[in-house]
Image (cartoon, helix red, strand yellow):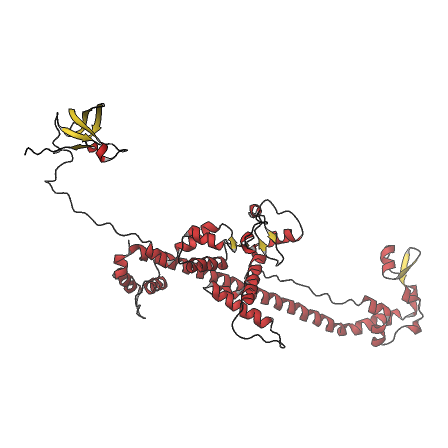
Amino acid sequence: MSIVSKLKKNELKLVAEKIGLTVPGDAKMIDLKRLIEESDVFKEDYEFVKSVIEQVLEEVKTQKSQLNGEIELERLKLERVKAELKLEKLRSSANNSETSLNGGETEASIDFDTLKEPIVSDKMFQTIDRETAAHINIRPSGDWFRPLQLEVPAVNFPRYVDEIHNCEPYQRELKDNQIESMCFLVQNNEILPIIDKCSSFLKLQGVLAWCVRFKEKNPLQITTGNLTVAELSTALLSLVRKVQSVYFTTEIWCIERGQQLPDSINLLTLSPFLDERKILCVGGRLRHSNLPAEQKDPMLIPNNHLICDLIVKHYHFSYLHTGTEATLANIRAKFWIVNGRSKVKRVIKQCIECLKVSAKGKNQMMADLPSARSHSFRNCNLSIEAVLVKGEDNSKLLNWNLAKIVEVHPGTDDITRVVTLKTGKGVYKRPVTKIVKLTFNCN
């Protein structure tokens, strides 16, 4: 099964474009597969095409995860709108209930008219406990209670609805409409949207530097021209500080309050601390060293954010595609990536230029051995009394000892591979690969 058989149409287009093929606009999946498989790049450099396919699949997976994140964010926004609509509905219903109080004016006036009758003061009411009576301003009379307003003469009772609304008992009992409060929390871990739109660390740093210049613009002293080193450094510190505030929240919170870091944190061995710039840096024992401050205490960078990939690619390209160890050493002169070695390996593995250079050549297929090919050691012409030189691994050729064969040891296939030699120093048993037969010219 071909490696392009399981790819989708958009993935096939990306693979074809990355290997330098021209893709027709109305090409179908079968045409794209045939175009890739019949290309010279696919036939000559199969490993390169395979690496390109893996990179395309990784990019599609990343885009899909980003799209899912955007969909989730839009869903949360929709839920927020629904909650706001529900809250507005509650507010409108509360307003309607407030306006509906006007409908009870007739009933309230009728009740007060009944209270103005002379026999009202003689009416007895239901017994309640003393705390409730004191709360609603009712004075006890024996075992029974009656409202204090009933002691007022009937002529002093309010006669109109406006007087009823303005009286103290009515105003005291009229409560404010309680509206149900809702809190809608949306958590967004997106640091800076511009990071996802920049494929270069230098470009990202420059864009942020221009933003910093615009923010700190002084009408009395206008800065023109190219970006300065100070502005680029300020932009870099702002970016690192923002990333650390999201990924190292617990560590920064503990350090600011002078508390000990929990044992579950993986940064304990790095002795992190906050410098005067509010940047989380790596501690250590190089305080009295003559190295620059950024090399003694590099800034901590999380390995699961896009800014880490941009930094690794920047140093890898700047130092002409160095290996893992060299790239990691150059990065640690300023930044300290958590689990940096594995992260650098993963990023360098995706470098197309490095894949082209480190590609392995194909082994040439050899033809079958001919039937007349002689067997090893079959025609070595070794016989007893033959004069030869015994080779030594740890001596020069001119210092080899002269020897004579005293016995041959053929194998089960009648092929001699080991012989017994006699030299001036003794008798030795050596393989035929360690001896050199001497030829004599009779003339």
